[in-house]
Length: 88
Image 1 (cartoon, rainbow, N blue to C red):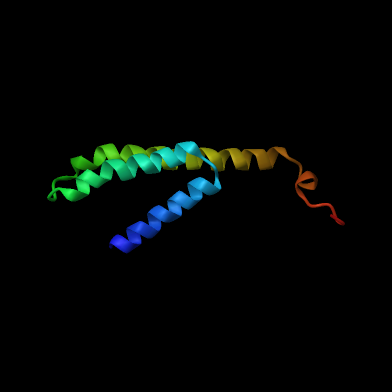
Image 2 (image 1 turned 180 degrees about the vertical axis):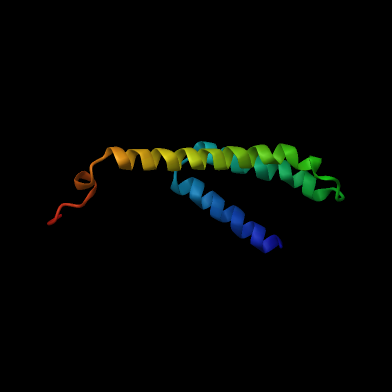
């Protein structure tokens, strides 16, 4: 329920901070700010979730972008350059 949702949001915030992504932070903040009024009204059809979904789209879109860039960078760098020197 509520505790599980709080844990997920905290994990998402920690990931945004770990990756130092302002776009992910903004997307998460957008979701929280726009979902709060929706959570306080009586249940309605799903159309009230469209605006908060933009925040999730920003968050996960930036996450995928960062992931793809890291994979592409690791493929460009030779394995010997990524490894640690033997006596460091």
